[in-house]
Length: 213
Image 1: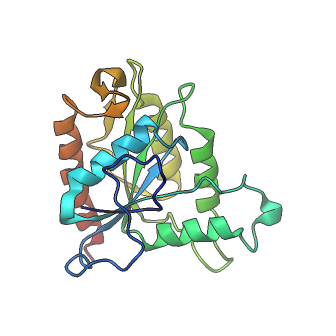
Image 2: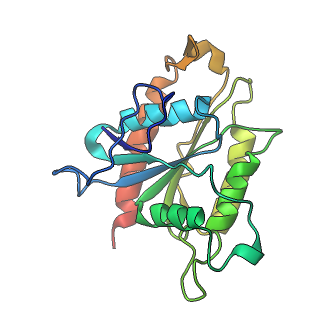
């Protein structure tokens, strides 16, 4: 498994960091960018993203996107784009696929995620398409509640489909009652682990299919 990101002091120990080039033998595997809908460093969905990277193993290069420095969308600041926006757009463009991990706030996905998508939905330049267009994507989420993240995911499907993202609608993963799979605050999937593995396997197959000419 290769998980690329800027390491924080409080990251779960399962997260690896690499600032160098992709190692030999990994250049031809898909590059998957995880987009977590919570900015909290130890959020359930961030931890779920790390476990997804483990489920992919050495079949993909997996990077967790850091977008906490993205400003609120403002057309007055759109051209030229802020440096943080340009960086994130470049990461999305370079990725072969996106994997969204989002909590559900008030029956919706969080505002920080909507703000990010708003920036990504806009063309980087008048003669360039938005970086989201045609990008394969998967949806997962975990929540303390009984309803999991199903309604948030449905709203994300509506938004991302409109933006011409190539969604893998089946299987999606929405894990309820997160407390039942926590040990000392750390997410250790038990009953849900096979479903995450099944989604990881299906997503790799979906990416391969989408990449065929």
